[in-house]
Each structure stands twice: as structure tokens, then as C-alpha cells.
Length: 196
Image (cartoon, rainbow, N blue to C red; front, side, top):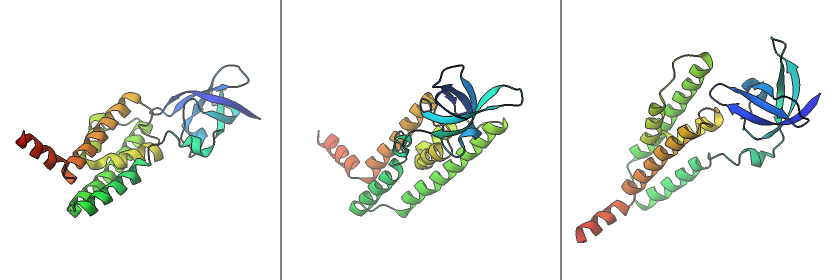
């Protein structure tokens, strides 16, 4: 029998949370597998079935989002990846850059995506994890587009607010450095300082 409720708590690192039924009653345990390929989002409405786990306790199964698809992706920042690629192309057309710069972004993004995937697997198997400072270092070193894709597609490191604050700082620092080095802005500032 289908019921409706909201995902009231979700721990992305551990892969489980709790859903509060609209009809009332106690919250139900829900595991990542119950979402299929969808990305769990705390506060979002879902339809679900109630099942029993191996210990005889009730749990939510077969969750389906009740939010429109556009709303489900509203919090996503994946659009920044093609946005940055477009900005890079414009900068390259105006102020040609060595091909190695684009190569660095591609290589580091792929490497970062792979590291995120490995860390997600390690979390699932209870193995040693990749330090967060390493993930932030990869984001700073041109790998932030790959990290952003991994956060969305792999549903990994996408809910912890402290991690995300540091990630956005690293990504912002990388983009700022790119703008300073790829455009005449740094030269203009240096000329202004020398003239002053």
C-alpha cells in the first residue's frame, strides 16, 4: 500500500535516514537502496511502501519523489560546469591560452571524480576514507568541475554543510586565480599599482 511522507532526516555519508509519514505515526527507517538511482533530499516529499526488515522492524521501501523533476534539480549546481566551459572558451578566444590549461582542468576533473567514487565505495565498505583536505586540494587544483559532477551523480559529499562551504571556497579560489591569470585583469591591476 502506497503512503506519502517527507524525508525528515538524511545522512549521506552513512546512506540512510528517516521518513515521516503524512498520515502520522513514528518515523520510518529508509536506506539508500530504497531510492533506486534517485538522489535523496531531506525535506522532499516521497511516496513509499512500508516493509519489514530482518529484525522485524518497519521500514520505507520503493521511494518515489513527488517533486517535479525541475524542482528536484533546483538545488543542483551542475550548470556551473558547462557555464565555466563557456567562459573558458570566451577567454581563450579573447586572450589565447596554452592548451595545457584546458588539459589540466580535464585531467584533474576526471581524477577528482575517480577519487570521489573511490571514497564513496570506501564509505560503503567501512574502509579508510580519503581525507577531506585532499578532496578540497583536488578542487583547488582545477578539479572542482569533476567534484561537482561527483557530488550530484554519485550523491557523495553533497549534504555536509561544512564540507560544502570549504569546497565552494576552494572552487571560488580556483576560478579567481583563473580569471587573474587568463585575462588582462592582473596586468591591469599591476599597472595601476605601479602608476600609483
